[in-house]
Image (cartoon, rainbow over all chains, first blue to last red; front, side):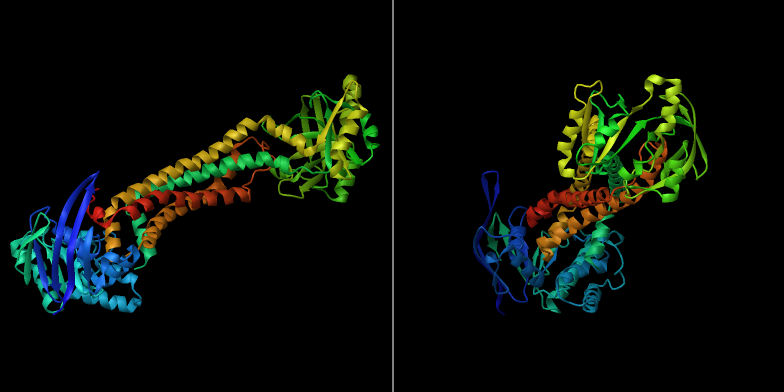
Length: 225
Length: 386
């Protein structure tokens, strides 16, 4: 296996007024292709920030960040947006579905940026929703779905473009135990069956057990494996 | 799923808020259309004037008459083609609310000097031949269901007594803004009665209308005419018909200016209303915009979504408003005293201005939400709690 994510000496600080708040301190790590990495740590430890950097929705203050062969820290905003659409699938804690769109339309959203025909989009959306077990809920709006079902729609949206990496930020954080278990099983399946590299941030040790490797962050530093 | 569908779904996400905004824009466009119509109709009396016509009136005031004898002298001024004259008669036709111009004119020359009043040669001949004949505008004929041969009786006020006329001609307008609400009759008919009943008012005319060959010489000819009557008991003031009409409009200038300003203030207010709606909508969707950006949607996509929504609301409001402006303006005309406005219609420029205003309202209202959406970082968007 080769490293699909390479983080070298990355630091990240935020500025509040004129005060610099360091979040990540000279952090380095590698994630192998096909790996399921669990990032754990207390609130404020920098795990979501690290996930955002890997996903290309935030930029490091310092250091090198190579993801899927691209030095994403050097990409322009528009190039980065294009790169994200083809390389990264996102799963959020609060699902972040568009409430006025059906499950089908929500999953179809990322495909609108591609050159797929309507028929191809239909096939991909139906496949993604079938994988997550919602083939019979395509015309449902988010408010007509349970939390677990909404998260599964979000996962279908994340995989519909067939990205190489899935990033998940507390994907079970807003779910009951049963739904959380279903989501974790689904993610495990995506990793093992569909060979997706997954980076998952979680507070939940039970969720982290699904990961093939766990990393702990504390105050911006990796503290143990 | 098309982007347009998403725009419509977004626009109707808060149905009541969107409907109230659309309703507000419609009302504003109707008010704009109505005010602009009044303003343009007011100004159109100036537009309807001809460059080759001069008006000679009493120098002190328009309300004082001029001697009939001036006609021959004015005709001799070089560059003058033809001279006609008119006297404001007023009077009451059936009801005081029937407001339209009633004037004693020179039947021999009136229609030569005013070629925009279209009358058939037969009707004109009949009008000239009969002492108590009158010609009325087509709008008056339609409004009062008058036809050739009908009798019109005026109750005189400036010229007291009962005055009977027979309709011998109905003129049409050459242009859309030609006044077709006038009643014209023989000055001789009035003058002869004045000679008998009030001799001191005989042989007076209200004003002269001078048709000139070369509009470029209007200033020179005006000076020459006025010089003829310098130091007389009735000095004259001659000016172009346009300047004369502008003098009337200027008297109401402050009101018209206020109406003009108000019409644009209304557009400004509704712009703020729509902008407020769009800002609220964009604020509520801060997280969604972060999601769109995360999924790879670019700035142009977000601009399209926000601008599209703003334009949909603005176009719906503007379209409904414009559509309703026509019957409402027609209703307004009906509600006004008959003949208060010689003509009342929505000028194309009003429709154009309302349409442009609708587009501008949509565009400008989207600027701030677009700016905010584009400048909010994805991570900040996800942290946003609305």
